[in-house]
Amino acid sequence: MTSTTTSLAETGTAGHLPLVLAEQVTKSFGNHQVLSGIDFSVEAGEVACIIGPSGSGKSTFLRCLNALEKPNGGRIRIDGEDVGFNYRKGKFHEWNSAEYAKFRLNVGMVFQRFNLFANMTALENVACGPARVKGEPKKLALARAEELLERVGLAGHGHKYPMKLSGGQQQRVAIARSLAMDPQVMLFDEPTSALDPELVDEVLEVMKSLAVGGMTMVLVTHEIGFAREVADSLAFIDGGVVVEKGNPRELIANPQHERTQQFLSKVL
Ligand code: ADP
Ligand code: MG
Image 1 (cartoon, protein in one colour):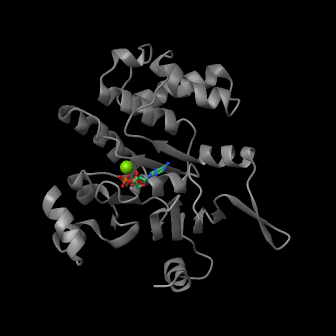
Image 2 (image 1 turned 90 degrees about the vertical axis):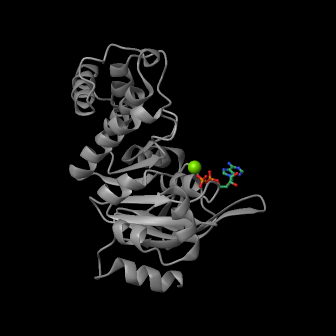
């Protein structure tokens, strides 16, 4: 598939673009080509899961989606806007740092390691973004943070410091912290991989409730059961390309490519 035919196929009727649209995205680190032409899209309100072997470029791709990495080629659009560029006077101009910062508020990211501020309580962790970055009055930010903690099942834990919370609770605070910025899209990079097995479900439950609530989500995960149950699409990435993408239940039950079959036989 060339990028032009893909883009025509994926954009469908004139004027409609998926909320997240990546076309032929490439990325190298030195001589090492990590992404070799990724085509990927997510409709508003959908949950897209990504699976694939370690080192296949999943994290790099997510980091390109929220502009933590700059692709070497291809095009990424979120809500129709090119990521990293403005089009003015017939030319593309790279964003300045303020434009990058503004964009990242709109695309939340939750990492494998929770990265909470150790010197702040759970409540302060959630409230600090809106208060500092968006200039929300502190009282309002704290009240909203309280609601968000409740939404991730942590009512009454707001006064605790991260050290006093379990890994699953910390990851739920991290999710609440992302939600506090009202992102249009949430990216999750193996959010349960660092957790003890008994803490995985509480985090998946929170993510499921977000999905049911209509949040647009891109999730790199090894939780095949979650992908099968919750995701609208499942993509298998290997060698820096999307080898196969489709309905999760169909893809898991009947993978078309040998590489997908081999991968699934190891993780199922
Ligand atoms: P995955 O998330 O699928 O395990 P990654 O996207 O993390 O894969 O990494 C893909 C490849 O890119 C790996 O070989 C990794 O070493 C390399 N890589 C990722 N980030 C960098 C970087 N900042 N500099 C150099 N190499 C990198
Ligand atoms: Mg990774």
